[in-house]
Image (cartoon, rainbow, N blue to C red; front, side, top):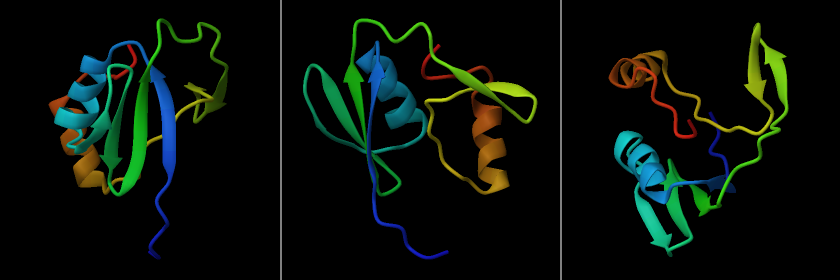
Length: 98
């Protein structure tokens, strides 16, 4: 696969400590700069930034994908199947937003 240029993505979180636990500890994303209101992570060469908010939108729209309701606002990694299965086995029910 050709090398892709890095992207930057900022997203809201209601708990920076929980975001650090999920992205930093569980997914192994090194932490970059931070403040009391946001934290940068190296997401496999890309920069993602968790911004602290008091609450997230309660009316997040969804679309049906493969028979499941998927939030329109989302992002993720495309992983080899063995790595995906290892993460899933290590984290039953773990989700950074809920």
